[in-house]
Amino acid sequence: MRHFIDTIFFPTILSNVDFITKPTYAKFRFSNNNNSTDASTFHSDVYNYTGSRIQPIFTCLCYFDDTQMEIIPGTHLYDRNGYSMNTYSQKRLIDIHRGDILIFYASIHHRGTGFINGHNRRLLQVFEVFPDDTVYNEHRDKLLIVQSSKTTLMPIINSVSYYLSKNDTL
Image (cartoon, rainbow, N blue to C red):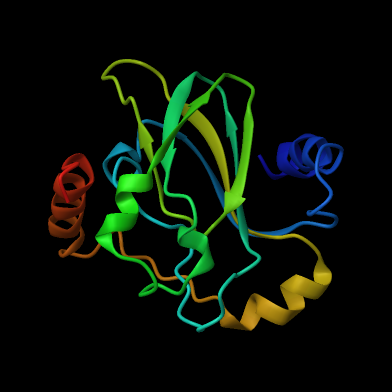
């Protein structure tokens, strides 16, 4: 998988954008509906606790099936306490087609939608993508990766997050 990311995925990105020039990434995974519980609730891939407005860290996704994603514009501009539930009323739906590559600030709130049992939702997820060596060297010591998926609290958090994300009246 790393060979595909380094020789096909990122060269494709580099030929189409100018804000990523020499990517460094922390982790990746290939999924097929195996992360639908957490992916279907609004979340960020990186949470900003630094007090800085923008963390120039990206998530890069390559889709192998048609799907949709919702994003909440502007949520990457603030630290984790800089917006309210009213911000969620501004959510936008993005149609994604097989072969699309989606690049966004890792701190923007987003969720996958349109999960259909029995249908594929295959994608390559590359996380904590730094656009160049300068940004990587500036921010790498500020990044803390915490594995929380195996804690006993996560099923409760996922259930509450799922309920809140489906409730449009909030």
